[in-house]
Length: 309
Image (tube, rainbow, N blue to C red; front, side):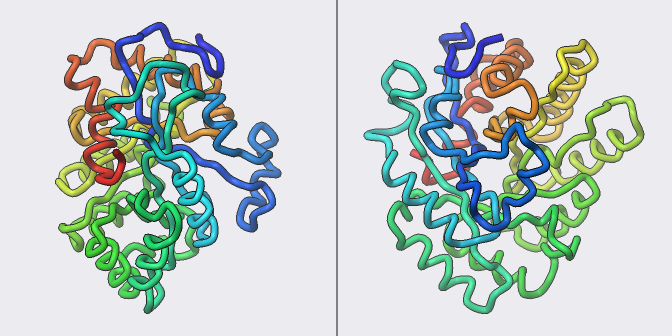
């Protein structure tokens, strides 16, 4: 397995990492990091680029706390790392030399009466042209049906009017709620993060529940999904089979044109790290056609996050 910053050995594939985080450890809302010492640190853009293997030539930065000031910082980072041209034309070299921030998924208070104004202000901030989506940490919101609340509905309508996507971060038990939200906002693109966190053991009833919920959500044409946040620190055959099974289900449910890959860095360090995840992903998708690989590797991310290059 390649280590941080090393190539996978598949020089023909280049990846847009559709889900990565950078953060300041001191920021309010990140106190939970104290419980996971492997990632209990500052995570900056330089560290992200250093960790990424050479297969990766672009990133989508995603908010980690429900705090608009973090989003302003992410956009400023994007402005300082903007690509000189379309991501598809990136020059060869190491990830550290060329990987660009292509888009940002930020946060505003969608339940607030002035959500539309907040979106406009965020888009007008430095780097605002890289704002491609909005996310709310619905999986830890005290209200498990936050997505369906009337105030949230108005906020999601504002996201659609702004031409942005909405990232869904939900647990398997919230997939039905996500489907109802997608039905209620058929003009809004929903991007499901981490495939809604499939259970670690594919041979359990909870995995079957996740699969049914994922397939039902995938019936909504305005939903796409990220193959991200599913790496495991487990070199066993069972873990590899689980990844193969998750990908098989996701590909059958969504198709490659509605899937994109992400690292979830630095949280991928809770598994075997960025390089190993990319290698596992490349290996698991090696039998797909070139067009299918391209869609998963970068095409879906560039097309669906419409401001991603």
